[in-house]
Amino acid sequence: MLPDTLDITAIRADFPILSREVNGHPFVYLDSGATSQKPRQVLDAERAFVENFTSAVHRGAHTVAGEATELFEDARARIARFVGVGADEIVWTSNATEGINLIAYGMSNASLGRGGQAAERFRLGAGDEIVVTEAEHHANLVPWQELAARTGATLRVIGLEDDGRLRLDEAAAIIGPRTKVVAFAHVSNVLGTVNPVSSLVDLAHAAGALVVLDACQSAPHLALNLGALDVDFAVFSGHKMLGPTGVGVLYGRAELLNALPPFLTGGSMITTVTLTETEYLPAPARFEAGTQRVSQAIGLAAAVDYLDAVGLGAIEAHEEALGGRLLDGLGAIPGVRVLGPTHGAERVGLASFVVDGIHSHDVGQFLDDRGIAVRVGHHCAQPVHRRFGVTATTRISTYLYNTADEVDAAVQAVADSRAFFGVDR
Image (cartoon, rainbow, N blue to C red):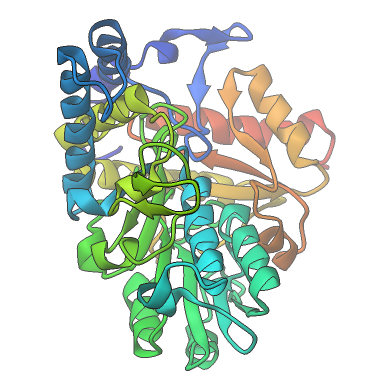
């Protein structure tokens, strides 16, 4: 039995898609690690804005433009409160990937001399080091590879223990006087591991390095206070936390955002433009060139209101129970290996696994035939799969709207797949 922390029946009624069937079966959605479903409250908020307030924010002087701007900035303030920071420290992006690229390219521009003395701390060159982990999503690896290539800096990697946890002794040896950036995921999208943020922040700041936190898999599931975590930058995506696609969030400490040279340039992020030079607005506007993703920001604000109303503590407890049930069920199936830590380690309610003798895509197709949606492949994290000697896994990821029966159905389907593919002999 799961703890009575959430009114699952009421929650599920808010998500229209969960009432449909797939392949003649009730739809079981266990792929929230990739993208979450959206409740009616989010759909209604975005629709209401489009129907009643569509206008260019921060541009028009007419009534509706003013109303739209107020709603847009109110959404920013609600997101800021949700993660414990100031509204001027929240930048709208298209997704978390854009947010990380924004930081990396801003640092690249600083390394070319843009931004003057204020941007000095962002400049990289030969002998400087960028530190990531072996468990990173490609979005928090490739931009740093590119930054290293552009500046001559060296990329260094913190490895993993066999149980999927970070090698903190290795981190302490790697992070030092040459380190300029330490970038890592709060929660691994493959292993489910909740990484020790405070330990890594302490190591980085003691070395004078900046910390970039990928919070894509933590913001939807854990109570997140970025101010208390003392990170310098953080990113997360709306579509993983009940919000629309096409909107993400970059957090940066105000003094850092105001010193970082912009990445995308154009309209709305300037003060003065001549034919030869341009002066930029303070953050966050200096990073929001062009027409904004306004209705999506409104929808994301409605999503965090929904999460607040349900309660992140209750969501975390619910998913912890589902995750334990999932690990127990998969662990009881012969020939199934779950990547990452099992019981006793801090982790979220997802599990990536291999079934001996069956390709992950075939496992996923078998589950899909029963109406169960999961993720298959390398999950945009090839290095961590390579670390554990596999090319792909099947991933089951839970969220606040999932039930114990759905987890049990998925586990049973995984068990049944062994007989179907003839590997249970």
